Image 1 (tube, helix red, strand yellow):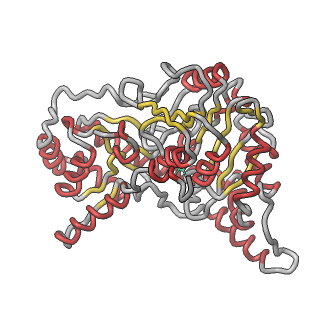
Image 2 (cartoon, rainbow, N blue to C red):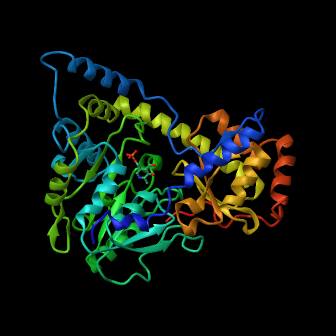
Image 3 (cartoon, protein in one colour):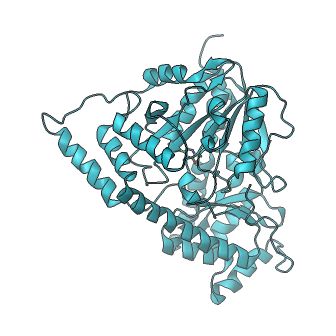
Length: 422
Ligand code: PLP
């Protein structure tokens, strides 16, 4: 067969955020005086930490000198940044050499590029998931086996029921859109499955900074994982680099799939697909890992988590079932009384002028949920949560009417779902 990649026919239209924008614009046209608040934002809003921007500026000035000018960066990252990332792992007791660290312009780039490593494989993916994993593997012609993330499994699928055959398993922890994280036992189960079945774990740790001093930050904290796992990390959410662009992957020397060492293939692939990351960006990333950089960036993460607590409090007060928001900027919220994600989106927009993200946009199993994000500015988050779920007495009456209009019973509403983590 000639022509274009027929994998495109397997992709669903990229409609989620476009449709959200369309419905918002339609509402705004009809109600120009209304102020719309958003809990739908998936981007950071806090400014770069001063040590980070200072390092970027100094590197830019260095590039303007004869001695300091640099052309193409090394394909896998400057040694200073690879070493700084490895040192960050070492600080958590994880042994990774600088040569196993590959710098990139984004975990999204790595997640998509990774699909080219594999031939005729089956990819196991939580549903809902960060959409890049689904799309990249569909485009590469791989088979997908979806693992529904449901209230029954605490929104953290296990290998139970998966055939003991080689899979590429893509896990994100803490998750997006579902803001819960696997614990050590849950990840050990996955590593045991991978070792026993000849599978590979692709572990996306883009949100690990939100774990603070708790939880499992890296798959390589789990014994036996070096032979069966690779990891993606990112400065996007930890240091506010969504607009700066810097991330990394870890390919241990001993990791294999189908009997083939993967690191040499990854090096071949990355050398083909990228010319590296700008020097000032890598200097900024290294600055984010210094003690001063970490102190400043961790402050931003704590700010988002405080936002998440505001939303949690409002949800609990209104008796709305949800998970997440403890080790993640995202909360995964059940729509009232069995209505669909988009129906609740519309109600939130029309009745409360608040934007939420319909869960079904992340996969079929996300139907009946919405994702709320705590990445916005404190005042906006506070007001949006109060508008939706009540935060003071005046707003409470309003929020009750929103819930009751969906048939939520305000009594007998204690949540089974809160705080589950495994
Ligand atoms: N992985 C997950 C799970 C994400 O949610 C995101 C961004 O939202 C990314 C990766 C992208 O990270 P980056 O900005 O490094 O490309």
